[in-house]
Image (cartoon, rainbow, N blue to C red; front, side):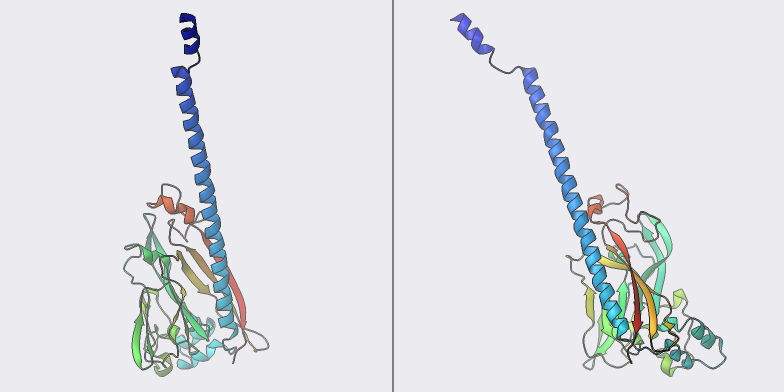
Length: 304
């Protein structure tokens, strides 16, 4: 009887064996969790990059179409608003009346705890068919942009004056380039011989007021949604001065846009690493979603 009991007792696991088994299972579980997290992170990064690339190409196609349908005549015709021989007219001709095509407001911005100066925060691009007004993603966090309010649009439609606020990217029909002209000194440069052509950075107001121009036929369109589901915003929209072809049958535009995520501490002034490093951004768990890309646009205006 005693020998049978001894044989049965030898069949169980020792405490050391149980401890080793539990440790092995724990380590295996940790490895599985790490692999799953890395897989999910890679998937999120891939989805974000795909979303940025597809959205960026859609924006490029939209802006390219707007340029192609814009007047092919030189923008320098707007320089006739300034007196012959004046410094304003000379500057206007030298840069191809660029201020009637591109407006950019720059300001001091706090990015990942560091102050950066002369960063684009809002602006407008007016090729002559549709105009685009954009706000930087830096306005998403209170206090990040110093001393500057985000851009607004004041317009008239159906006899009523309205104001659009809290947008990322608006598109509206604007064949007179009134959006860009509206922030120049003087309400309407076409009717104001004292209009100031040179736009100092501090002179650019945040309200694009075109309510004194002709009424819009349709409401401005949100090209980038402000819904919580959309996490993509512009950080810059730039254009060189339009170049007139030798045949004078069209204008050539070279432009670019920077599209990125709201999350991840995007820094467009950085060199090489445009997203905050792990631990360098408060919402570190959002770094999987951080991405940024620059898209170039080259197109010819052939409209009347």
